[in-house]
Length: 231
Ligand code: 4HQ
Image 1 (cartoon, rainbow, N blue to C red):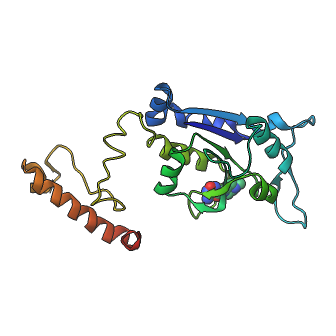
Image 2 (image 1 turned 30 degrees about the vertical axis):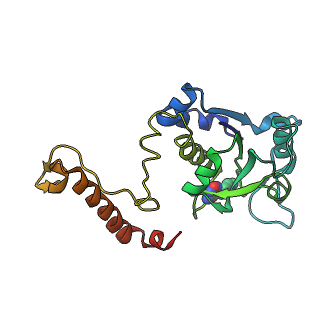
Image 3 (image 1 turned 180 degrees about the vertical axis):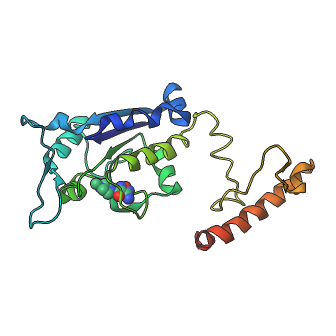
């Protein structure tokens, strides 16, 4: 699977992808991430990517032209709504990014992530260039870069062949799908007087399995009751 990222801060992506699952997926050759500097597609001396909003108001907007030129140069033959690859604009106004969106993206050949900055992006990008606007959550970031990193991380661990994913990412069983993870402990069995539940110390795997399902349900009921009312 391939990601393209278009940003005015390409250096931002040096760190996040050099560790853990994403780094391993890249090393294994199942994931490729190409980061592009939006200023590549400017032609003036100051490499201008922003301008003032029509009608007035606070701050600046990313101009449509460099963003259109970037996408059209990265994917010259692409058409809107094409199967297999998607242009995604990170935006607080977008569809909410969830695990099911991550699974959707992991099945694509390529995703091109557009990271806005300033007060936003000229609306013609959302309207006529991006296949969709995507939000990682209901809060305001100062740029799309953190959102793009979140999306790449969540999708990378679902790619077949990424080390450990057959066991851990896909372990989600029929009975615990859509629930929070159950609580877990490691040694010692007692720490500062706090004990690990007895059932987990005995070797009864059927008992443990049932206990974990119930613990996941109870944790979900307590922390995220909204998840129990979903399909
Ligand atoms: N943005 N999920 C980028 C976000 C955001 C989000 C606000 C998008 C700022 C420039 N992105 N603009 N939430 O808050 O993805």
